[in-house]
Length: 580
Image (tube, rainbow, N blue to C red; front, side):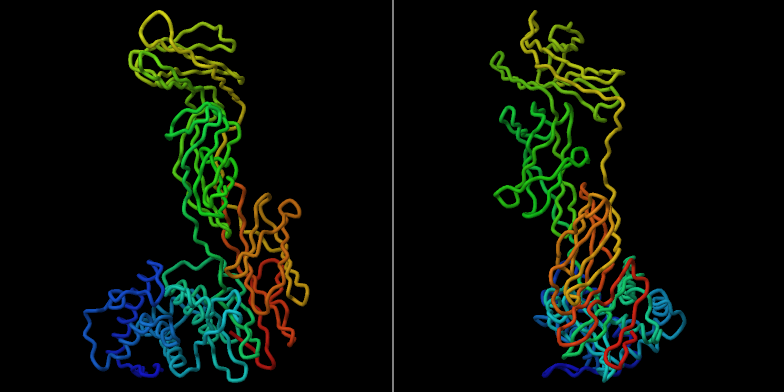
């Protein structure tokens, strides 16, 4: 089973060898986990990672184990032997742990009882004899798929098929996850015969083996697809490619431009007299950048001619404090974390040179509930300790001054009103303790609405859109999807890892999407929704669709789904049926 020039792979292990095989497999798993955490490919592992069991002294009879641990990491790209070593390592690790393996089989396949030891032995024998073999196919033959499990109609040989394009860039943990999923598809007929376990039992098996919680969609997902192999179209159970679900980096709000005084709000927390300031934001080029105030969605920024630089001019802001954040979403609808908050207050400002000192003065209000309860605080800043501050409530500038106070900035005065309306205030400041005041602010207008509901942030993700029907046309080369989802949301459609586009909302909560002409082969269609506030749903279960070549009469849509699939189907090729 080794390559030319390699140490031949031993096929038999004694009790001592089984124990060491389990230890070697554990070391292999630790090394692959370390590689995956660092985002490394198999050939990128450093020597220290390959020698996780460095302290063990290998003897001549341990060559199989040495090959098992090292072969998956020494090649420039994973070979068939490398892939086989991963599966054999996992299987050997279960020898002597049949009780735990039986419990895992019960949860993954619904078949409970003893027999795990015999199953492991059968799988090892099938892999070593080539009855269960791994083959790598061109990406054009496995469009939208990472891997698949099928049975050759004439020879009855079992095949684990892997997508060459996907394999070239996959990490070790990603490869192991797919291999284990296809191994699960091979286990199912051994346990259940012709009765295919409902849902994607291979995905459940793989997740459980790797200590992860299986995805909810695996309980009902129809994993049957069609793949082409040497001119034949085989019905297979597959591991579909998915769009990347990695969110982009959080944006950064770099500054806020005051268009009234042509100034920049230099520091978070400054006061501006511009009620419609412009934010400058940096984010990943091409992303959608949403802007929020106290977590409440305001709108979407525009990317400038400088890639990765975005600007956003706010709607008219009320006086008082504001806290802006931004979130970026990529083409697949993945949402970043929020940026660091950039705070500013809207008020009136002024600058005066007095006694050789320049005073930058501001007058605003401090509010926490968008001024809906009639309670707020007047705040004057910029004066020095000992300066005298007065305020007045006046729409005309003729009211009586009062509330005299002194002390360092800020000067504050609590206000409470009981009726909705607009209230007007001014402050004046005496810098030298004389009989006249040296600076009087412009009028600050504070609007109170005691009947308005307190605004709250929308942080609830929409539900996954529901498939109503899928309608093939043009011999199955074009597919129209009809879905229902949250009104006003954007529904993105994917084929494997590729985004096809966004569905059109044809009615309230009704969405339609028609594909372009699809290539011959298998397709795995999924979708998700993003609401206006930037909350994204989970990815849907995959809808499998096959475009047959024009030279055969294979089914044009596998399967045609209306609603949610709850049971896998069995189709046949020629006179031999596939039952796994």
